[in-house]
Structure formats: structure tokens, C-alpha cells
Image 1: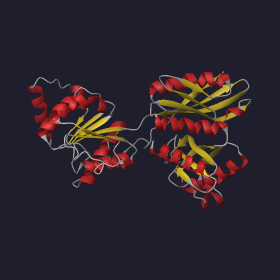
Image 2: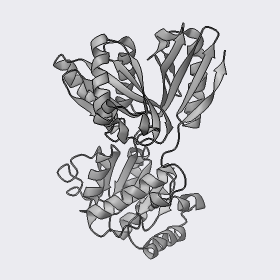
Image 3: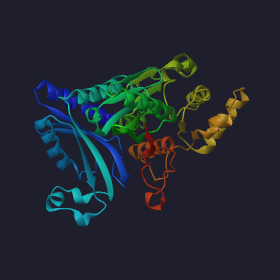
Image 4: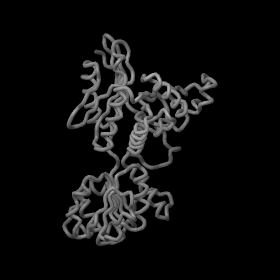
Length: 388
């Protein structure tokens, strides 16, 4: 979300000064790659750019090709293959293309002057302003009579589907597969073959940013909120002390909520949207009330600051007061919270906690990558071709 927002901001600034832009999207990856399909960057014709589609080894060359696409006003699909570096020429090496990750990446470049490019960018802008789970389908390859469909998009969510795909036959099958990706919460690519041509489509599952509720506005919550915002997360800070829950202490927080321990139930609607929560008020009575509230909310992660014995005591007291604590909820509680990185200072603790949250949301263990025997990134599934 943070990268998409930066792209939208640069485009608007460029448009205001009369500059032309091209949207670059990584639509397919084979083998290893620094970024997954869905990575983007924006290039302006006066030399600015936002976002990235690699670790820095492709961006300069992509910028040159994006400027060419702007000058001829035509979308193009560029393929970078770093699986055989013996085949790289002098220009490839000079522009850093030979420093890839031993994979093949497919990059779609769309001048925003074209209708398709503008529709793509507008769909991203709507997602930024109204973040809601959806699938964005992008036609990135077409042959035969389907050539005009390159860059066309379709958006799908649980309320509506909007197709801007010129071929009605292609649009119908893409909508069906977009719905499947939406319900599976996954991205995918698919090749469609028709009697008069073929097309390849990237289905990108777009999820809203992680929403974090921080209960406790002490000094150690300040770097936690700041780091979470740097990641592009939505942050809500809740505390019973008005002087602590202030804009001066949490300038980037999306919401600041003042609520005493006996009034938390009254503000529950303000934090029900949160995906994850951390409990760090350093006040036993307040933490008790917070856990009582969270026990009935579908959080993916609940972190509790402090030793395990203290957390066990909190839950034992809740049970003694008749509060039902399910095993499902306990499985989502992490106490002490954070990964074991030897953190001591508030900034280090924030890094430890946010890393654990990221690992839990991604379904990862948080261990050393050098010990991982599977790919670092989850592959975007390639659906079997459809014959029409």
C-alpha cells in the first residue's frame, strides 16, 4: 500500500507540472526474483520515479524503456532473463541487468496517456482511498485478434465487478477466474487460448494494509506506532490518559482513542476493524480490561508485553470472573510478544514485535532464511491454460 500511495502521489505531482508518466508492473516471474508479481514503479518523462520492481538491478534499464514507451505512446511487455548470464551483452551488464536473481521477470510498461494505463492507475487510486479486498486482473499479453486488449483491466470484489476488457469472450472468462482468486485470496497468472488468438492475464489479489491497535501509549509504544506506519500499516493508539494519547507523541497514527479501563467496551467499534493488537499499557487493571475486550474479537494476532507468568495471571483472573477464554483465542495470543532477537531498547522491541506480527500474518516461523528449504517468496500460481 505504501508503494502504491507513493506512485499515485508522484503521478499527481507530475500531472500538475505537465509531465507525462508510465506505469510499470511486474506481471509474471519464473524462478527467483527479488520482488514478486504485483511490484510497481512509476516513471515520469522528466526523470523521476517511485516504487521498484527489483532490488535495483533493473530500474535504470526499465526507466529507459519506459521513456521510449512514453515517446511512442505504446504499451510494451519486457522480459528480463537472468538465468543464463553468459548470454548477457555489454549493455545488459552496463545497466546492471546481469545482477538479477537467476530468474525470468515479465514487466508491463503502460504510458498513462493511453486509456488502459489510466484505468489501471485509477483502479489503484481507488484502492488506496477505499482499501477493500479485491482482485485486479491485467491483460499483459495478447496475440491474434486480441492484440488490442493488452493493458485492459478488470476489477472484482464481493460487491461488484467492473470490466474494461475489450474482448467480451476474454472478459467473461477473466471475470470467472477473478472471482475464484478473490475467494481463494491469492494471485495468479493464466493463459487463455481462443480460435482467433491468445491472451495472458495477471490476477492480483489486493488486500488492505495491516491494521494495528496499540493498547498503551507509553514511551515504548511510540517507536512501535512509527515503525508500523513506515510499513504502511494503519495504526490506532488507545489509552486512558489524555496527555499520553496525543498527536505530538503519535504524529503519524491514524486514530487516537482515549478510553479508561472501564469504558473500553464503549469504543470497541473503533478497533473492531483491526487485524492485530498489542497490549502494552504497563497497567495490570488496564491490560485485564483490554484482554477481556479482545477475547471476543477475531484478531489474527494479540501480543502481550511482559513475562508469561503475568499473562497467565491475567487470564486466570478473567476466568475467575466468568470470562470465557477459548483455545482458539489463546492460540492467537503471543506472550511474551516479539521474536527472540535480544531486543532491549524500545526501538529494538518494536522491531521484534512487528517482525513477529509480519511472520504470523504470512504464516511463517520467523526463523533464519539460510535454514529455509523452500523459496523465500510464495510463488504466484500459474493456472492451467484455458482453451476456448
